Length: 209
Ligand SMILES: [Zn+2]
Image (cartoon, rainbow, N blue to C red; front, side, top):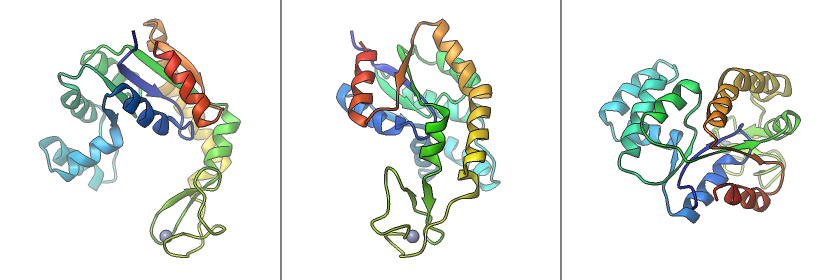
C-alpha cells in the first residue's frame, strides 16, 4: 500500500518543495507547507494567526507550540497529507506524533558541498526583494532583476562560510535527532537528492510503497 501520511525532510536547496507539490498531486492529498499555512493564518486573522503576528512584529521566530497548534487544526480528520517544513526539530516531531500517525518520512539527502554550491548561487534584488538562483532560476539577463533592472546582490548570510556553518548547526541540533527518532520507528527512507527532478521524484515514489 502506498503511504499517504508523509513528512519530507531535507536541507534548503534539496528540491524538497518541488517534490512535495508533485507527490501531493500524484497521491491526491494536500501539500501542507508551514510557510504557507502561517501566512494564511496571519492573513485571515485567525486567533492563532493573530498570536503569531505578535512574534513576527517583534522579529522573533513563531514558537514551536504555536506552529504545532496550526498544524494540528489543519490535519484534523485528514487521512493523507504531504508535510513540508514541519516538523523542524525533535520537539515538533514528538508533538506531531500525538496528532497523527506518520507513515513515511523521506529525507532528501545532499552532500554538504552540493548544498553550499546550490545556496551560494542565490541572489536577491535589493529593490523588490525577488529571489533568484543562478543555477536553478536565473534572471533573463545577467545578474539583473527581471522586474526592476537593478543589479542583483548576494545576501551576507548566503556566503559559503555562513551556509556551511548553518548546515552543520541545523544537522547537529535539529535534523539529526529527528532522523534518529523516525529511524527508530522504521518510517524513515533516505532519498538521494543529487539527481535531476525526475530521478529524485522516481526514488521518492518508490520509497512510498
Ligand atoms: Zn527587482
